[in-house]
Length: 144
Image 1 (tube, one colour):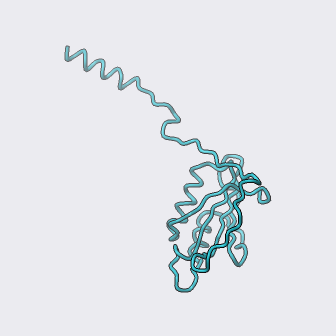
Image 2: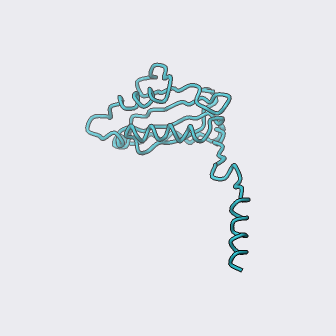
Image 3: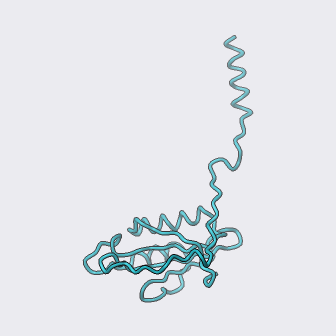
């Protein structure tokens, strides 16, 4: 009896084939509609942060094709890869008297065709650069 139970156990272990999509997430970013724009509410002076936006365009394979960074003083020069993006994020100085995470807001505008793994990679770069809070939003129509 013990011998048969080991044979059954070996059979199930050797024939088990997990699905290839196990552990992967399929996430689509929502489309930005004209009616989705919230009314403009200006924060008070104490809550006002320097806002920086990272623009990510997707290549045909779902990877990152173009990277852009725009801040209150304008856009930065062309960013060619994720290492340059991290270097640019580290160069940003917070407003006087505030810490980096208190005085700067980071938003990632992403193309809906970008793979989720690349989006998480950019979010990890922001975290390594010292920004704990990162906002996500779909690419605006005028940018795509």
